[in-house]
Amino acid sequence: MQGISLWDRSAEGAWFGQIAMTPDHLLRIHRLAEGLYTPIGYNGRGITPGTIFGRAMAELLAGSDEADLPLPVTDLAPVASAPVMSRFYQLVFAANQVWKSI
Ligand SMILES: Cc1cc2nc3c(=O)[nH]c(=O)nc-3n(C[C@H](O)[C@H](O)[C@H](O)COP(=O)(O)OP(=O)(O)OC[C@H]3O[C@@H](n4cnc5c(N)ncnc54)[C@H](O)[C@@H]3O)c2cc1C
Image (cartoon, rainbow, N blue to C red; front, side, top):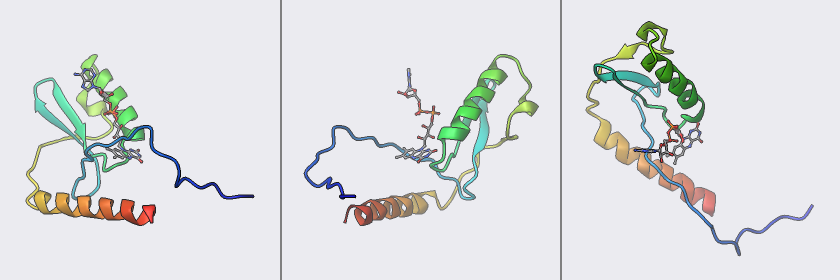
């Protein structure tokens, strides 16, 4: 089988975004105010849990009980190391992309 060279191709589109990381790499559901929830912290694995949490949020807003959510609702808590860890993750992800492109 012959290899395929991608060097002479150009990208037609690009996709990017922020990834919410948590110190323990587990996701969270926070209540920001009465009736206002934020499932967050998918740590870059949000396609499957995002779908499940989206359904759970819709059911909650339609009248189901908070206790039926896939995770308990927790309080927001500041993460002192967030600025440093954010830079660290940006560096690691960028290095990974450079490494893959060589
Ligand atoms: C660079 C990167 C790589 C990732 N890689 C992976 C991976 O390999 N595997 C994985 O599982 N997850 C990955 N994720 C995470 C995953 O993409 C997300 O967790 C997931 O897409 C979240 O889905 P969502 O439906 O909650 O939100 P989104 O996919 O962000 O969908 C929200 C939608 O709402 C629209 N919208 C926003 N505001 C409004 C408005 N006011 N009115 C109308 N529409 C609005 C937006 O345009 C968007 O289409 C990655 C994320 C990033 C950023």
